[in-house]
Length: 258
Image 1: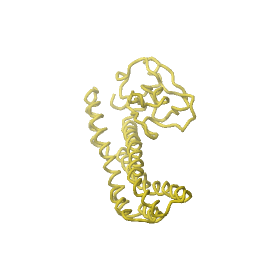
Image 2: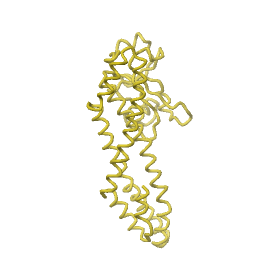
Image 3: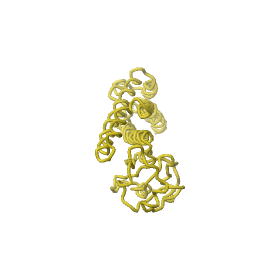
Image 4: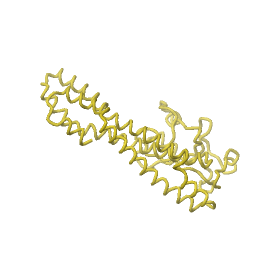
């Protein structure tokens, strides 16, 4: 984002500031920058998640099968999921200048109506730009990193035939109420819940752990029922109920490595 700031340096026309930000979205150097950042973000997550799965393999009675699957996965649907996330994240990063430009346009209108001169407005825009761009970038980093982790977890799970995961929160005061209710709940990958609706709040859609803004929750794939503390809460058919291991085994499909 530093180079974007350099493009605006010294400008005294607020509308020129907005124009340059909008144009940056399609500038080749910024497109390349967005793609590079997105690739780094996703490959770091891929590496971290791989370590977690290798640890699971060491605990599993058929860990060798899982480990070999991990070694080959970049050539499979998991690799496809990785590249899909790279493209999606790059688009979000590319949107930052345009989003900031929209906010600046509104700011210009309000400042103009308040009687400020163009040079004064421009000076103020340049002073707040670093904060505005940083806020946007941080929101993207938090949300997309979490979504990417979940996407990779789901791709790995589906490749291994593991249909269920356990929703885990950060277990601190910042966890939203609707997600607190989902903590340790077993969820099927093909049946994402609406945590807000389950909590009696307005629904913002159905999604998996980590797949909504500012969500720090994680999806932990269930490879064996021995990894679950029973009885356990289960999301199914639009509701959360508590099941014993024997009850859950009736709907459980073992993964290929168990």
